Length: 57
Image 1: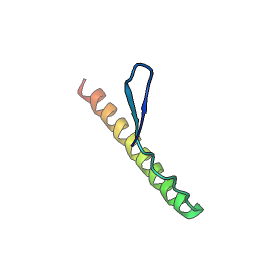
Image 2 (image 1 turned 180 degrees about the vertical axis):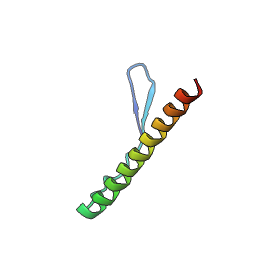
Image 3 (image 1 turned 120 degrees about the vertical axis):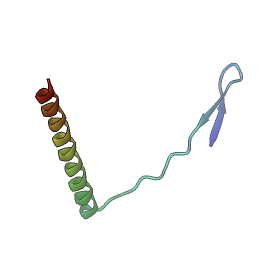
Image 4 (image 1 turned 180 degrees about the horizontal axis):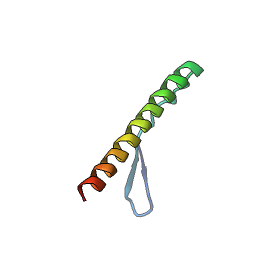
């Protein structure tokens, strides 16, 4: 962890950043498909909860 000293003697610590990962096209496509399925599932869940709320009230 990198630590610097600010004006007034206070210490400021910076976290070590992770290395960047370069993905090929196939890996990107697989992750994109998973994200789309997760978004679709969340949308269906929200719509079901709204429909249930309307039905109850």
